[in-house]
Image 1 (cartoon, helix red, strand yellow):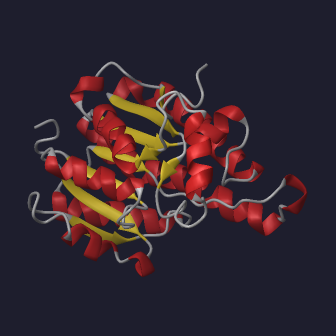
Image 2 (spheres, one colour):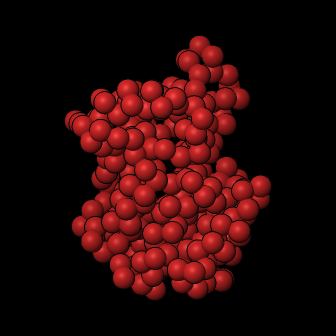
Image 3 (tube, helix red, strand yellow):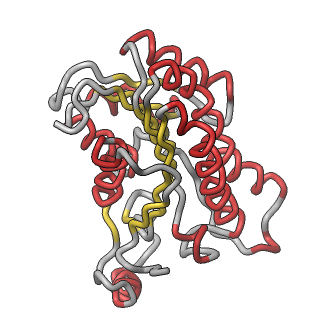
Length: 252
């Protein structure tokens, strides 16, 4: 198994139809012990319990990635329970479909705090343990909207947050490569999750798919597979990269 004896932390991972939980499920199937971090209302412990049939030792932790102290406490809880942290998937993020002139200061802060500040906070929380072990893999979830300048669901502040994730990850990759820590990004295209449910008619989905070379919208498992690759030794010489998972929606 690709992740045997590894410990993976996944933020925003409790949504059963989301990218984070799909990644948790696949990593658990590949031998990892998984800590799912999410807000209390998302019930991360219940999500972790759903992984129990794959292997033992999974953990659900209540954490708010916008709060540095919460991230530090969550990392400490994982280290106490599971002994190490080998993988971090910075998946937590929110979106808002508004235009530039409609964005308020509160909107801007809320979107950037979760996606960008949260990526920094959680990375800061796990990096000391990874540095001590001289190894680790951090995977940051960006978006095709950061690359093409906007998407279907996210406003310009979402694009800005996800573009910031790309820059932050690349800078961290340069800094921590000497410590054996790889830091990479994934830029998903339009993936069918809870965010998209009920917001696209079947006709609109067909229209979007007709402009994608692979002729379909993405699935959460498509992104999970990319996360597994970057987390594993198969990607041992990859750091600072952005892996596009968009079906060809953006080819550049």
